[in-house]
Image (cartoon, rainbow, N blue to C red):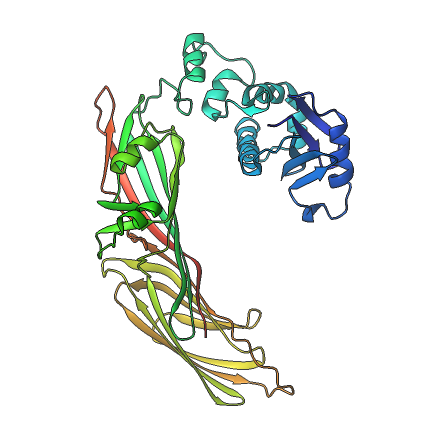
Length: 430
């Protein structure tokens, strides 16, 4: 798959290179330097370059390039995933703001990492926690030295994302369900596009090697099940997920059987699940705009906002960016709630609501005075953009039903669950 890994600085000088196969030579770095780095428009170059039968796939971090070289028809997505993970690994060793000089100073560690992460060009051992047991910066003390048999079992075992011997005085687990809503409403009020992109982020501070069982809604359907079963969700009865992906610690076979997510979590923060929903979305806000041209130089704007969620929930930092014509001379806003000001740079009226309780309705009106135009160019009317954050609410309806932690010492676990829905591209056409 990957024939060579190259670390090259912004001037084209080689930092570290490791060749895994004999089908590429050291002239590869010269070809990359000449065809990519030497160009003046480096920033606009595609991250995949094909030169004389050799493919260069690269990412740039700070003042250097991390380049994968291959002669095969390899998967670019897999290689990019590997390269970005390699950047994370370097940051864990050399600091988040590491530079090319740090790689030069610790070149022996870089070589060790290259030898561990790839075997004959195939990704082998990319778990950062385990790598830090195998490769240490400086001399390891007796207190932190691991027994060789323990390391060997973790390298060859199935659970390489969590090291053994982790202990905490207080065992806690935090679950964050984070969603972003994308919406496009037509001039007639029809929904042209609606989508929820979500993820479940966990922070696990647990002793030992615990097994977690995580349950979501009673009725959780994935895309192919919706077609085969012809299922229709009643209000509040379940969630229809179009597609989803899991952290590699999740036992997918168990999820296919009973829709429970079973896993041994990594230590600390990690992304357990990503998902996308396009049906039966609970839109948090209903926006009703009316633009009325009184005369050639006067425009009247009326907008009603309705919060479509429970009264126990409050939205925070709601902002509507209301477009006005480019020839606007003055704006006289009237708000029932919040504050509004004219933004001449963006040609919008920015209506801000610090807090909006569920079920609440509020209105906005403005009189826009315009300069008389000398040409007949028609205003394109950009859409209204809405920005918001709604804690304790999910637009998809996804919620955590249960979380159980099993560990041989049977300790008590404190569990925290939080929901947050934010705006993505939330637009209403005029």
